[in-house]
Length: 209
Image (cartoon, rainbow, N blue to C red; front, side):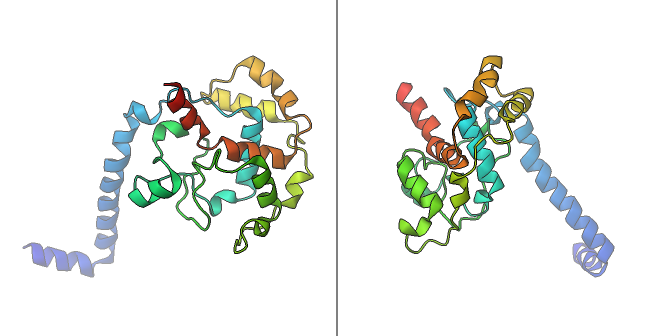
């Protein structure tokens, strides 16, 4: 009977491992397979555009410095989160995010709707010395970002061309002019541009509809 079968599986390591793998596989397929056929998950929100050169570079620096370890970028559809961070995030807002930075750990606040909340000067001070603005902050300072050129490796064109290959609608003119837009900009300028752009795209689409 079922009770004896259950005891047999519990007492047999191989059968138990096999059962766990089968159940986990079924659960994974139920979650993953439907998303492969859901066009809404791969269709960009109206008026959403790929990151301009300075924001794109800032995003890469943000990833390089490990900012995503402490800050998520996904407002969950929970009442408390919506009150604190703004409208819940939707898949259509992340079509041009490679890789996704949704995250699951929040040592610091979620940043998906941070755009427009603080001025560029606020971000500049906060990045170089967080405790000048938030006395109890445990965030490290990033003073070297203000000293390094944003496009020191001169590869912004290659970065954009790689994303174009993956489906981002960059034009050849945009790629050609990208180095000019980063000329004279520091890594700090790039990160601030990225932070300021977060969440603004959805706000802009809502005001133009």
